[in-house]
Image (cartoon, rainbow, N blue to C red; front, side, top):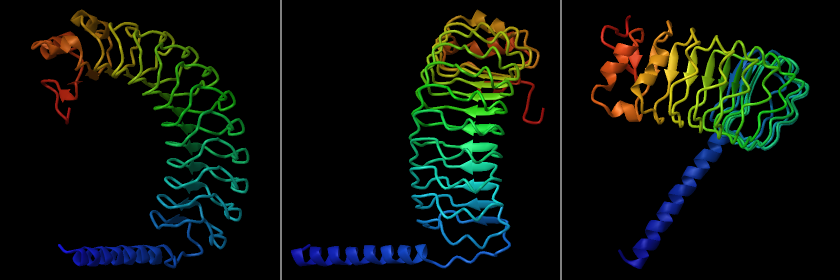
Length: 325
């Protein structure tokens, strides 16, 4: 190809790119028609870069602005009927201008660029709050949210569980993929049913004594070496300890409500340890693959013989059980 041809090709390429950009810009500026009586408005992936023009919506209850280009929370003060606001995956850096949304029950600010939890004190009715994949380093700014039942702070930079003592109604707490080293400061969350802490830096199971209603505990991808600290969690149904450093199965014999025990990819050598699970009447699903003892050719048959009550081992149905059983 000659130099002239190269220049021509490059020029044509630039023209094509410019055309695409112009089309995207026109699409971004496209007039959006919304019924003034609409209760739900979904503007997902519309290249919106500013929240504006919603003042006429006097009956709106749900506003979804997912996957847009919004940088600031603003111009929502007239939407007092709003109960759900979804700003997932935008470019927001600060929580602000939400004081008027006193009826808000669900707020999703996941996948933004927020570093500080703030500006929520007026949202007294808030029940569900999502801050997945932001830049948050500290749990704070939630003390006024006494109706909160669901809190998702996964994939941030949090180092410590703290400042949740007034959030006594929380039932589901998600703190996975952070930098947490200890399970602590949860005594006031007596209604907690689900605690999710995968992919942190936890080495010891503790701090759960007061969580008598805990049903699901997720601790995969940590550094747990021993199963302990579950003496008072007799309602536990799911225990996830995949990808840890366990050398023994112990400390679970009393968990009569346990249906799921997950401990794949640990350092379990002794097949006899499986007997710790033998007397759990509701046990249905067990994961033990990717352990030293699972390398044996007789591994599967031995586990099924030791645990006749289970329906699935390592995601495969045991003989005699089907998807319809």
